[in-house]
Amino acid sequence: MPPTPKNPGAEMPTAHAEMEALRDAGRTLRTHDLSGCVLYTTSLPCRMCETAAYWDNIERVYTGSDVTDRGKPGYGC
Ligand SMILES: [Zn+2]
Image 1: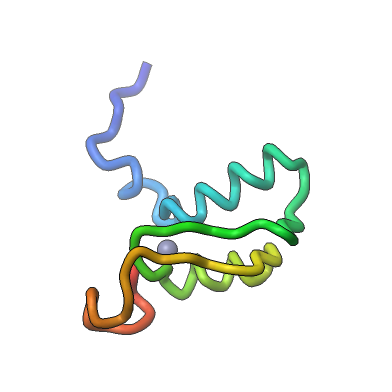
Image 2: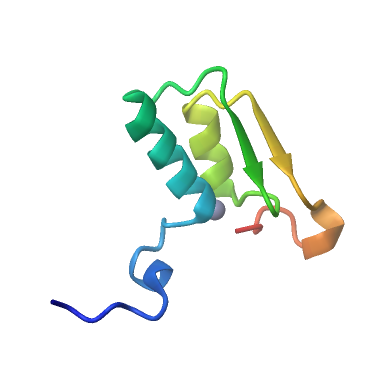
């Protein structure tokens, strides 16, 4: 059995929490069309996650922070 990586995200660069949530929802609902679903995050999603949410038809994204909390737009994850 391979050793458990200390930081699994380092080996999977797209494994942001938002991406994992979208993947989990797709697997659970057996579709990539997540119309009617919302996404909750602790920080503003990065551009990749924001775009994935758009393409999965996420209607709303609720965040626990705003642009002033991170300083740079587009780099939330
Ligand atoms: Zn992200």
